[in-house]
Length: 406
Image (cartoon, rainbow, N blue to C red; front, side, top):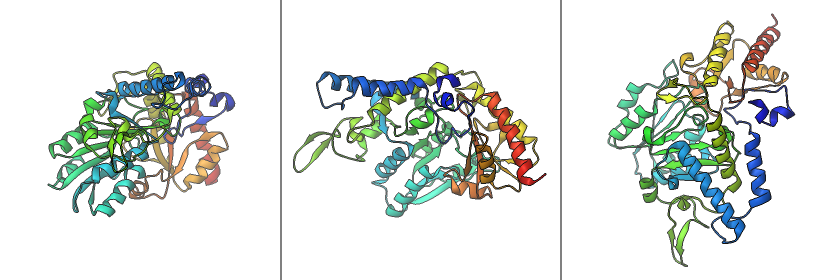
């Protein structure tokens, strides 16, 4: 698979284990972006010239690719954003606009800062209350506690689909069902999940689903907000300006129909085209088997095998502590090495052209709850191999030997 990604031609000895931060791009995605700028570049929805028509068609066809990827009911339920972060900020603003003092929002202790801070900020402004589903020692959510958090003032539940720290898939269908029984809307942060498992928003029945392209082998600066059509039609706009209106005079403006109601200004056209090409790449190369996690079908069977291999080998090292339920991890492992700072391990491995992440992973409350100031994190991608994993284990052993002086 590495031969399809130019980065590995430039860096043939690179062992890239930081895919939860961002993924590399296949040549097909890079070529699609170059082709757009060299053959079809124009603004969309504003011109009847041949380039304008072609660019608009490519952009809207990209929307349809995303629709099918998520199994959304309508293409207009797909809103292009810059990122997961922007999608959640958008939702925090429009969903909370009519909430009243004392209304409640349920999150989890697993959340990335992008699915925590926007709700914190709006809660301060609107004087709302945040509640949290606790994380058990296994890394799993306490679903029994979750059921007790609802009151007559609970309005929104916003949760991650796959933890960017623990690598565990959360029981989204059950979370959604319980929330809907309590008349609450559900937002799902799918940033880590979309590259690992088959996402079917109709089956999940979530009200909103957000993700970023750059974690799915697509360009940076492009993201997706899925929302049920009937909800997006009723909700207020987020940003306004060019392309978001159907009629305007000096005193008022009438919003455009979906999806343009939420896509103000000139969008990241090449990013949407690149995202569509990345999705086609993933669907072409996925090796889905019957194996599943939390009833979600795994896209890349080999990633699960590599995860299990790494856990087995790392568990043999007495100095290594893995966080979360090892049996439920998919493509992501966070760990520490007794007596050695995570940054020292990461720096040693960087010298061997092994890329992984150290720190709090933009989930500081969770890392603190785990009793740590920082963690090391391995995150796998489509191009990782058994040889990558074996080399990592070999160099991790060397790092421990050198840094502990044994």
